[in-house]
Length: 453
Image (tube, rainbow, N blue to C red; front, side, top):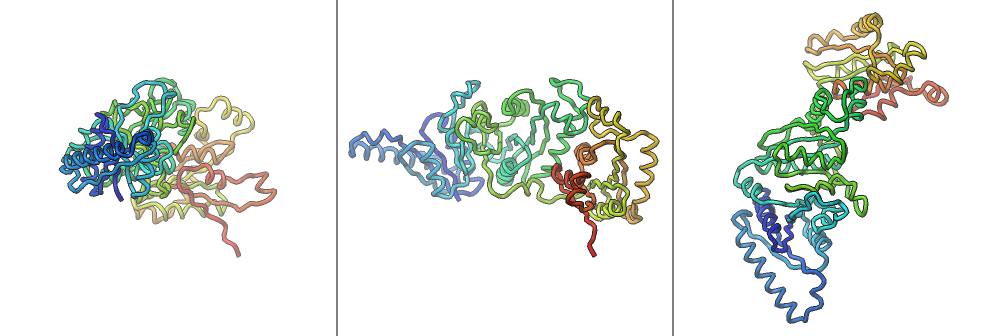
């Protein structure tokens, strides 16, 4: 494994050189300084080309000697020919690089149609993490033991999980404060958390929604190895995600933004969050491609502290309840839920056109009666283990949607419910709540099936 620093000896490249040396020292990785001669060198005579090659090697060697105090080990140098982005990427692959570092002055607020500098072409479609450096002081001071602050733009999926793993390795090597951030849009967020009837504004931050998002961010990233603080921030969006990530990074005084990349190429880059962030940022940006390890390491040691279990009061439905209590940790919480049907066509229309919540609660009388039936299902061992039982009685024509909304509102760690195993015509007519929950949930789901025999 190695780190590759591409340099053209420009002022932005000097910042990248210092950052790469600091990272190599902290991560204990070999460092290559690489300069790429553009193809026009082929127009030179062999003698002239040889003289230029020698001069570049000497210049790189002098630069390596100056940086060895930061890298704490000898630095290797190389000169290649070709188009810069392609040559750097090919060299990095052939040397099993774990990181490419390059400097860039940035484009500021210039239009995305100008996208196409070397750093952006290098990061676009790369299967190796690319760090684009705007200033080197933060990395040099970090190598000396002073923490700096990074923003991690976190979403669901492998790209963000890979970015998190990369940032974790960086934090394990030296003190690093991390702001875990997410951009949200008012309508989508209110719908997701079942607060559609409570939306007041599309332009003003909603603290209720933001507290739920920050709670979920903390669930996804409860801790990170190494030294430094962890912060969780939600940012209201009204335009491009990248613009709001930059606003959050500046508000939080971050020196680095870390985002996962879906490796967009061509015109699709103009709509890519990672490409737009790289194009517009005034601070360093790390673009992290998927590492092939999936999403499992978002929360490497899951703890089931709050479990939602639903029953329709059938024998099989009730059989799911003990599983929830078995799964939850001592002193945890189990939410016993039941969804009652909407009261006639008027109830269905009310849900569609004037919802207080996508999964409104039942009337007080019905709620009290059903809650009492739910509490009877609590096993005696729950009290001994300190497990808290909470009941939720919902009303809706779509039980799966009601349960999924409740799961998001409460931030449960897992959902448990039974499946009647219907198939054929019965399944087509009556549907499968378990299947719909399994398909729509972002959280682990345990399906309890009817035993055969």
